Image 1: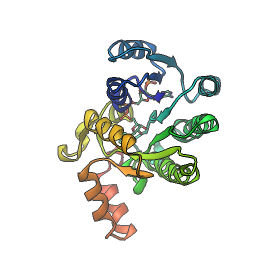
Image 2: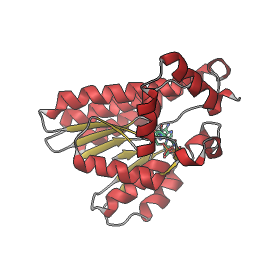
Image 3: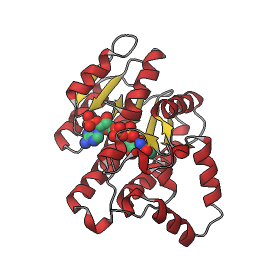
Length: 249
Ligand SMILES: NC(=O)c1ccc[n+]([C@@H]2O[C@H](COP(=O)([O-])OP(=O)(O)OC[C@H]3O[C@@H](n4cnc5c(N)ncnc54)[C@H](OP(=O)(O)O)[C@@H]3O)[C@@H](O)[C@H]2O)c1
């Protein structure tokens, strides 16, 4: 099961996994996009589930589904952010983001892990921002720190049972995410941008390897992260504030 699979990283991951003989269930809100996506997957036996993960009934429906069907892998990929200064974004929208990026992810992880068996895997999509703060995206960056740390703890709790848990952290990726967040892909220098194909390729490779609890996607992102380690927090957050698409608004 892959959440947020009607487009972007989720859909590209679904394509890659389908080509490796996985039977995939695509989850998102947009039924039309899901139906189109599932038709274009290679192989057979793929399904779609229309669900808004911020809706309690829809979320419960998915948990029930995870409990009754036998899934080997859950990829909690659905996520969203909003660019802008904290006080200028309606509180309700920021709380909805926390519900999607954290509450839904924890709820689905719980449902999946209750029935998980040796060999199964849970992948939670966090972000490079899990390792940093982001003025102009403060709540979003904080939700991703939550996801990365949560996943790392679960990696330890479940490894003895042969169940692999990983927090996967993409850097800036060219998807609809930025437009949905009120920004543009062009807000970022081209050299830091990854394609959804590159991100999905690395994600599936890390899932196959099943080694690390925390994987940062892309050598350029790993290099940047390494550089940031040498900065004090004041300098790091100042740089992030200066380059953040959310601070110009
Ligand atoms: N793009 C980046 O630069 C970047 C960097 C680091 C991490 N990430 C993370 O990577 C993940 C995927 O992002 P992406 O770049 O592929 O973004 P995207 O293109 O905007 O895709 C987001 C997916 O989540 C689904 N979704 C959004 N809200 C939902 C809800 N309430 N219920 C169910 N599904 C919902 C969307 O489908 P519907 O609209 O059809 O529901 C879509 O399929 C996210 O967790 C994001 O935070 C992205």
